[in-house]
Image (tube, one colour):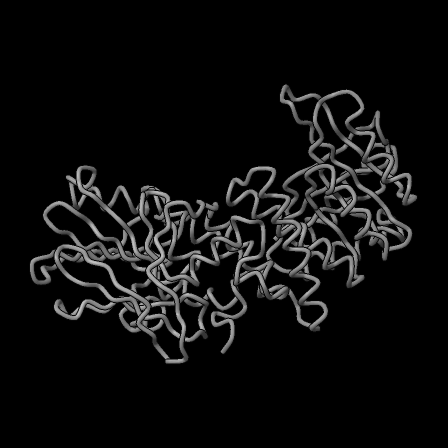
Length: 439
């Protein structure tokens, strides 16, 4: 763990030596220093690494006893703001700081040969209750990262926490500006939801971050799904199990392919390349996909297909998205920010409804209702839509003469999960808050 100490030193020889002795005697290791005498002859930034929180506490006591930590040191926040390298770009930030009567105790920025300059500032806000407003106002203009802070006010702790979380997610996922901003907004909403419930944010945000790290860890060359292949009647069934998200099934006839579910968008390219390695003539075959329901972890491959078969309820969900309305999982305000963060992590992008083929619509009250059928490879496949609980439009697909039932998320073989799938399953409840929307 690391912490940055902003210290006030005497402008004479040996001042840094005294601070270094205190830090070293307490078991801390100085890993970064920042000092510019021409800017401020008394302010020095020391980033210290230690293996225990108690080390930082002893260092604070020692530096405080020497008079190197001011009384208001606890109210100092060290931030970095990415500002375009164009005339007057810094003005909105300075105007915000002036409006809220914020004092800049340190600032460092210089031309680095790129279109962006990173302004590093140590700021002090007299009224901690206004800190959230200050940081949020700056974030409306530019990307802001909290480098370090020493405050105990609950509102500020939460504000700094979600901003640091959003910055971490940006770095883990290499997010663009638009997704970074959406990540910040959704993180703020989740923080408010948890605060209103009186819940601490740490575990929820930790698990969401683990999901992002998980996705990156098993992508690209590390993508290694469990695979099996078997003959089913006169068809061949390929089963591809990615590290997380839905299993992808591929039924192969002589000249056609039927996919059932498409996994996460973040694994779409990896999954398609993997399937091509197992079905070399994939590009020459007619192909279509059936999705059991419209959740993010089942629709990733849909953009690869000219025909997407689905239930009427699932179609309505995508249509709402097409028309700028909330999707089913976003309809609950408490679930919406989790869904949107999951969409960013999963790299989901809307793919339109023009090529969707609605099999049928649920009309009655049966637990499962036959909503329609289609044929593939000379066999009839019947779709049965459930009565809710997981998500609207949830269906199972049955081919009676082949003895095949594709159950989507209505029936899952948890005991048969891979190590990676079991790891992901521990994260899922924190990503959506509720796997089942109305049960």
